[in-house]
Image (cartoon, rainbow, N blue to C red; front, side):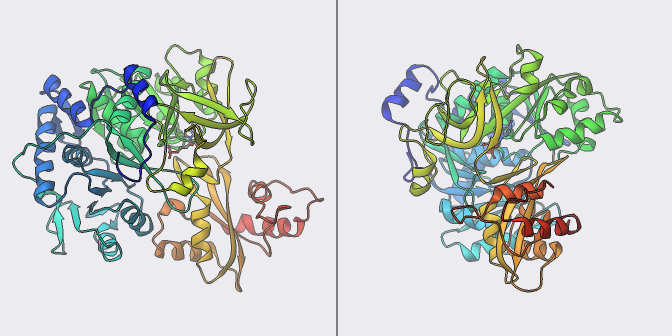
Amino acid sequence: MLEGCTPWPQDVAARYRDDGHWRGESLVDLLDTAVTAYGSRTALVQDDVRITYTELGLRTRRAAAGFRARGIEAGDRVVVQLPNGPEFVIVCFALFRLGALPVFALPAHRSQEITHLCAQSGAVGYVFPRSHHGFDHTALARRVRDEVTGLKHLFMSGKGKPADGDMVPLAEVDADPVELPAPGPADVAFFLLSGGTTALPKLIPRTHDDYVYQTRAARAAGPVDGGDVYLAVLPVEFNFTWGCPGIVGTLAVGGTVVLAQDPTPERCFPLIEQEGVTFTSVVPSVLQLWLEAAEWHDADLGSLHFLQVGSAKLYPEVAARVEPAFGCRLQQVFGMAEGLLTFTRESDAADTVLTTQGRPVSPADEIRIVDEEGRTLPAGGIGELLARGPYTLRGYYRAPEHNGRSFTDDGFYRSGDLARLTPEGNLVIEGRIKDVIIRGGDKVSAAEVEGHLLALSSVARAAVVPYPDEYLGERTCAFLVPVDRPPVLAEIKVALEQRGLAAYKLPDRVAIVAELPLTGLGKTDKKVLAAIARGERVPASTAFLPVAAAVHAAVPDAG
Ligand code: AMP
């Protein structure tokens, strides 16, 4: 395995192979098998572009040869940041063919994140769009190139010649196919990003074996087959969209993947009707928009068999509206880029589908619910969810110190989520321990935003907490102790944007306080702040009342 990654112990890997979970198949094999079996079927659709399996196979071969001719080699890391479209799929499979490793960046990422991803992965290449949603990515690429030594290759997608001579148009990454050594099934295929607690995202190595298996297990739990048409609504770089079973799982069985550039019902509902979409995956905030639109939109959504909803908490009252609104089944999904996936199933009772996040997709998934001391709780107890299994990582890339905290000695991943298991073995997510705001499906690390706030000359101290929001589930409130004149929200947003922070990480509210409340151990008391941000009265007995009073005055005006 690539240096800096943590392999599964040999005996465990052997068991996963013996039990038929890991079949020695790479993602390249997965695509080539599909190309042979389903050549003339439509693999990818975007607007007027329709790509058959045969064409997809050929284009990935040509792009692989093109990347090689431009100097990308096996083992190289390449950060890929592209909007939803066939190009993302072609670039990734081309890199898989080469044995080069895509690092999945989100379209919303800006210089902070991209610089970090390039540096942390040791990337030699960066693939980006000329511009997206009005943002000039070439300027971003220039900045990253200047900051990251070792980043040599810039590939720009989009029409026209790039302004800079050293940026290569993606369309010119094309050459006659060449024979390439196949990547090994145990090799790392690509990197997903953690939505975790550290200041910047950690890299999650996913091997061919583990990801091919994940998509197969998720497909069986769907279920999804060659007759299915999947609509990729959320960013393609999300694990949810890419492989739960998503794009990869659908392509493996000869289905069709339709790519939507944005998740609005105005864009997606007509696509569902035109393309006969049978399933898709959304976050609860997108679901809310769709539920509202279903009341007036006249598109025929009758082709939908099921709708996967996950990545953030789905309330039972909202869940109950899915079937009446869309005439299709709801599938709740708990997932994480680190691995473990749980789904509700077609055969589940209605109550299970509405109130739980279902069962693991693999019989080899191991779940433990533990207390603060790491002891397994009695059945039904609420504690931290730990996971281990054939597609759950054993370590982040190049993060030995963090790995020491994130994994138990026997290899379980500590999710930071609070959960319980029902007597039937269904998982219910009850909250979380980790310091993350789940804003829509986007994960915002409080530590990251606090670090940027503290770097501003106007801010002496900062703490970031979630507050509830009808649409996004949660939004971000920044409690600030000012140095002098209290900054207003707009100033803070502009300053953080200038620091290159992605828009979804900017605070939605700012509350100015004289001091931050502290716990008995002298740490910022985020429980108190979160309660205040929720609009709760803090008991008069706490020492924080003056702060609470100040905040109550500040919060309503600040947004
Ligand atoms: P990511 O790796 O970005 O997909 O984030 C994974 C995290 O999202 C999990 O650890 C949970 O905190 C959260 N999450 C995912 N699915 C759900 C769900 N169905 N309900 C509540 N939280 C979820």
